Length: 419
Figure (cartoon, rainbow, N blue to C red):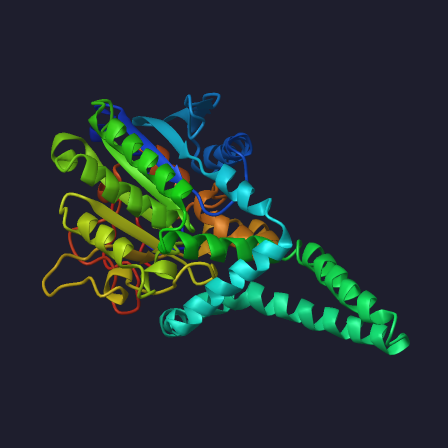
């Protein structure tokens, strides 16, 4: 089967899959995004409509509910098709409030902090490791710094023009004019190009790696408790932890901390799997100072019952395309199992031609397609994975190494086309 051909939904016409409904818990960790949970679930409901239309399934979603502390939001998604039914307890592990707090800092604080992070990642050699691992990500990492520097040059030029007009009176006005112009450029076109947003994201991840984000540390510990509760509730056939973008780091961190809270978690609960998409794990994992992160990922790797799948795409510059995270972090050992199982996907194949044409030039929209509804049948479909009848490990064959030299799927699962 070619990747461009229609793909049948797993379980369609399969009597065995209809014997009992699949009941899973999905714990979703998004990236450095100020989007509120309310807006997230409105988008989820809209994208669920694409899932219905693409696969011809019935899918209903409940109104979102939040925990007492507002850090976990959940909906119930019921899905039904010929031969199978599924119920998904979808939980959003929210940290948008921490992002908004960062956005509230004045520019005179935000820019120097981001420059400190840039200096750290340059001096440590991490940026150069990015170029060797995935040069597109390296350019993406440097993008907001380059634009900010360009704004500084424009502002300095404008200030020099003011000085030429009146060297004495302009000695005070020139710096003020330069600062005003820089601030204006950061707002527009900088706002359109997400310059401040991306600078803050670089700062946040650098601070977290260095242990300087007590707020996020507490939040990840809270998320770890949510994983333990879901796994030990006795209500689920599968617990699936999904990390998108920077959330991929915290998905693995939270699972490692959950294992620290209950070392027998995988032996007392249901199947546990991690799925990372648009992953930024190597953004920190390649830094020499990220020893704690690598140790925690190693703890997860030591649990043979836990499956970790990572999906990568060429057109998403935010992920590390065609890379093996464990090998690049030097955590692989001779004879060890493939972990994670890396599979390459094509965003173009997820969408109808007109839909892809609309988003292809939008860097972040392409990045978010990993967690959106497909408008074309394809072996990777976020909602089919989260709301379908098969566990993640059953849906994608994990009995052998998932990727070959060119990082294409080596074997086809029940609904996985050949690449």
